[in-house]
Image (cartoon, rainbow, N blue to C red; front, side):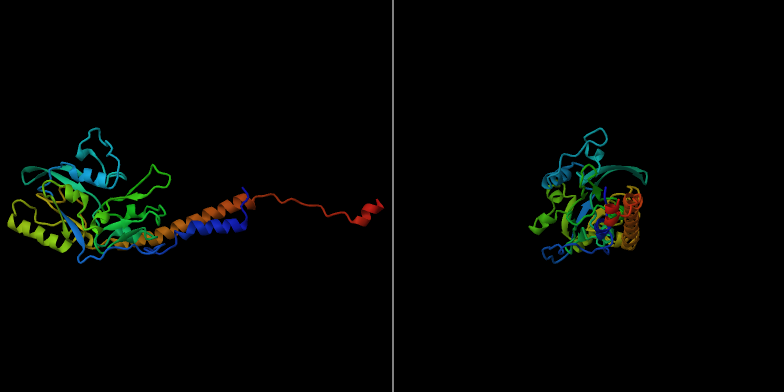
Length: 305
């Protein structure tokens, strides 16, 4: 391989161009969204969820996703895992608390945080938080660094490992349906009313009213109201969220940590790329043996001989 200095510098520039951009700097025009009076949210009342899986089926069909894989040997909703092709799933949790055993189905999906760590960690603005609530992803900006997967405290973003140009995949909060004035597909399909879509502030008021009206039915906490600065997806539960394995996080956003990952982690990757390219340049050019060329014989000398 013949790699001259010009080609080396060009290759270094291409490699580092997407890595040295500040966090959140978009490579294209900002995404457009329809104006919204209030940020939207979803309230998931786990006391009403029966684990029917209709929400998952509606999500798969609306987003043109393949049939969920059989992760654990049985084709039951609680045995299917979140993946690049499965954006939501009702997972069964068996909890013993206060001398009672509870079977609770927990619908898992992107939480669409109010101050999302994945957005602040992305160095190229491939993930953006819309004022209306959804955290959306633009694959045309993504450089595949997967910092969003590291930054997310809920371990939600998934990568298409089987694709040559893999994308980050997750719940979109049905942003396309919201733009048309429709509720997300999962909420529209829920047969028990366990999912309620609406203005986030109104949903918080509704959740607190339910707890006050029936304290024996609900654990006295609305998960997502304040966690990590708040999330668009919130939960009511008959048992403590800690017992069901919900992340025990504080009320402060984790964007400071994710911004550090994007800033220092990106710089480290860029430096590594530069060193690697420098090593390749030396390997293909610096180690070439110098060929000594004899001085040409003068023409006059040739004639004399």
